[in-house]
Length: 114
Length: 115
Image (cartoon, rainbow over all chains, first blue to last red; front, side, top):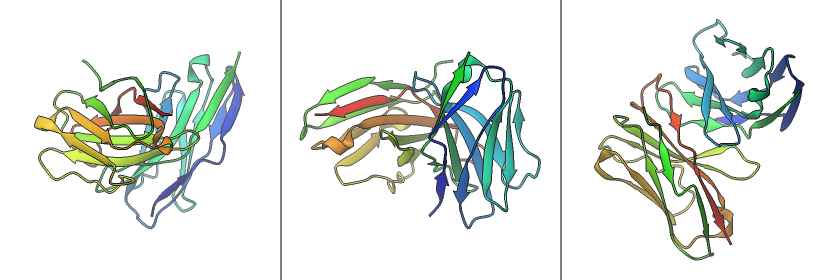
């Protein structure tokens, strides 16, 4: 079974600083996708960033970037220049290459301090 | 355009009652998913629909849970004889297909509280 682990239930960052959220996963497959979703208090899940396992280059979306270590099965999210609007629950997710059944981590609650 | 919508946004029910949760996917999306988010837990996959194919029910936690998707669009998740452990946020998501690169778009969820 594929599992996703987020070891940090809560994280805090000062506005304008950088924070890294950790995620590890367990799989025997070689082809898969990894995601980070943001869930603000409104509960709407928002896709932050996506990484294809076959790509060595780390995905980047503006202030959001990932450190994808396939051998270590690690997929951390780095948020640079943190903003108050970044405060939310962040979920790491995994899906196999040939289907879209996602497996999610337990989430990390990020607080941004002004 | 309109996103995924879900209703009701909140539902309080008594233990033993049946509840129905509704999901309206984005128009044209053929794939639809239901997830459950329990307090302190990550999202849990429940069921998946793709077009007219038989649904993937592998995530349903018990036979009290069922779902339908009529006309390839609106979906209803039904929980019979609700239990307190069913209390959670139920999220629906849709995508164009079940393809390799399809992004799932989530609705706002329904918060279910079973007393």
